[in-house]
Length: 396
Image (cartoon, rainbow, N blue to C red; front, side, top):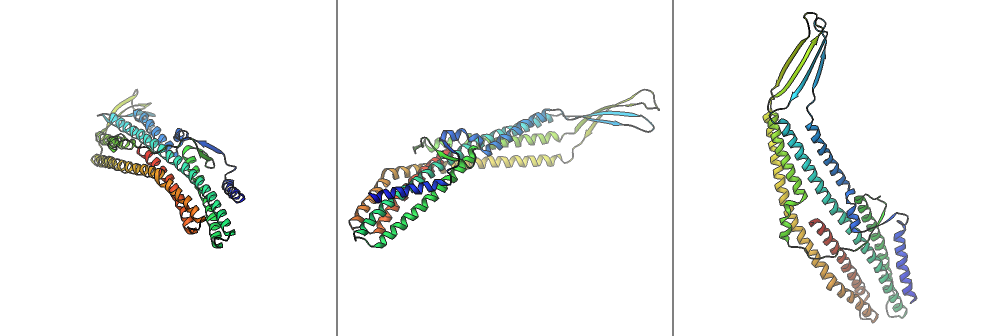
């Protein structure tokens, strides 16, 4: 009883030591729903929102009339003061074509922001799940220290009774020491996961976030065909489609800008001693663009590029959907198999190994191997749960 109590105290001391480094950090309990509600604070999403705002404000710039030019002059012999005002004139659909471009770019930026919002939710979900998994792995490491501590006590009792050699005592002590080191590693991984989640939800990086609330458990999803049918509705694809429309609008704009540019100018010369009154004038300037066909050619090439990117993205979304759905199902089946059969059988094998060792029918090496096998399958269950959760978020 005394040695069992010592093992429990040892496990407690290891846990306390693992928490010392973060004892002064602000503790934040966060459910998955809480984390998702704060996904808007994702840095990438904030950048995408800012880009959307820039695109929206660009429309007002194009809607404004082009800036007129006011010219003033003076002469030493003729007019003492000359004034003229030149106003560019957009015609032939140049203004509407320019508006079509900025509006399509606005739509592309809005679609990109939607895609960034989806990515932010996916990243936040994955980060929260990673934190929850690391918390479970840390608990598992602590439980292993406690379990090995009880094993070490049992081996010491057998050694005192003269039933096992001293090398078994030394080996179990080494195994306990290794398990204690694993606790510190698991604690460090948990803190790293907490920092990663803090970055995504706008919390201070030193916050000690704890994943609380109900953990989503693996369950079957709808058929693959249902998700493939939604490939064209994905935000990433919608952004690519908007970029293709913007490229097509730029082709039309380039063609309109290939028309001659018109400038209306009116003015007057005042106080000219060589003539009576004020000399007024009106003129119409015509600028013939050179090289407009090259600009149109470049715009068409950009449109072809964006169309190819749209086609590639659709295939990529469909391919990734198939891969993700299969990984999701594989993780679910693995999780269910581990929880239903493998873990109970491995736990029973470890307990039977402990009994067999006490009765002298098992050597220490096989006993420790059974303990490691139990740890491995328990960790595999956690990793299978994590893979299922992250793949589910990606599929959505």
